[in-house]
Length: 264
Image 1: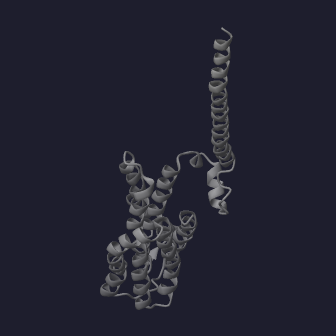
Image 2: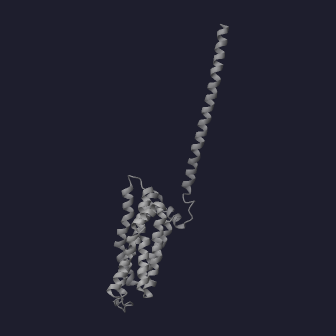
Image 3: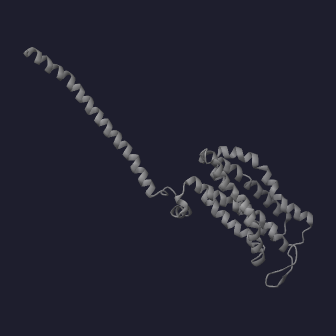
């Protein structure tokens, strides 16, 4: 009996010690995993407290604090893109609304008669108006390759930013009475803004989930139609009550602010 008890004790010792070591090792692994999972959660909480800590753009910091900044970032991007297209397409209405006060006599809303400043022929006017689309047509396909090689959001910001600068220069081109300068500015403006549509397709390539791709793209691209619908009456109002150059300056300023947001 004594020998059997001794054998039992030795067996318990041989099995019990490795089992205790295995249990202790499993407990240490569980503790380490818990600590590792807690670290990213803490980092995420800190990030939620200050989501814009890596941005120095004051416009983005302000937007982040509003109700718009609380929505999902892909929808915020779609709204900003919609506004960008709205302004970008609105500037195409500037020349069409301003030209009647530039080469024809007109009466302002207060009854004062103004003499025209320019003596354009129909051929000159046609070339200046259509020159924008000469450049716009050229960059459509190359911009698709550029959007695949470079960050598409920065390409979009580049298009509307340079277009804004050129829109501000257009009144100067008119005032120096150089048809060639106006046509050159219009062609260049079309070239740089021709990248906007392909660039936004490049953005949704990465940002749009498959089930939301149609809704996000539609939200962004409907800004182009809204820009044309709202741009013509707004430009006409500015031309009638301020001056023929005011739509060019107004849209140029807003495009600059949009460019600074989209580049981030």
